[in-house]
Image (cartoon, rainbow, N blue to C red; front, side, top):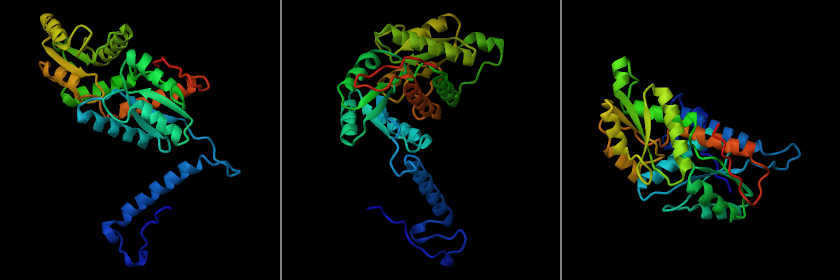
Length: 306
């Protein structure tokens, strides 16, 4: 049963006066516009003969998971931005570890709900074990047909978000040659034993360097070298005293906090809910749909970064 909207008599209302419950005419019109938009979105899935067209594959954003409660709230808010950009697209969340729902539980729920096709977009910024093994293996064990998209980085939209976060933190591009010679950025990333992860982070650093006009050195919170403090020390030894730290993390957490503590000057916030991140998730979803073969129970990983 669907709830009916509150009934009222427009003749009893003056322009701009509140309706029962404190609702104004303007806000009511906005609500009706939203209802009309949602209805139009649903009707787009109905054929002229009355049969329902197949809907788009579900989008499952795959986050790593974190013990920091801020990470989960940030990811959920980011998914809300994705839903706002693509009304009518089913958007779900699954975690690799530490948080619920786990990816396996999300895929099981989709199967129970009758969803047959899903595209998994890793909320990860480079290739590594999770992208190459954990996510595909979990997807392969599910009954839902899946395609696994590339991680979010490297990509120009990721650089857009990094640049914006640095600007919000107080960064301004060097205006003089002296500023350019003494400025640099450390791109702080999580780190991985997989060499492809360092390749991807290095490419993101080069893209950001081209945007900023100063050297950008990739550094890592764990596993890989150099560490963030080591990269800062090396840059300072070369006369780069205006060193900023760009947080290449999707959400707040231990690694982002530790990297921020090492910053000698300014540090940007994690990428979080920046609009470019939402656009990038949808780009990866669309590209996986366009370049993957017809879905089979075995997921195919889309590695193109264009």
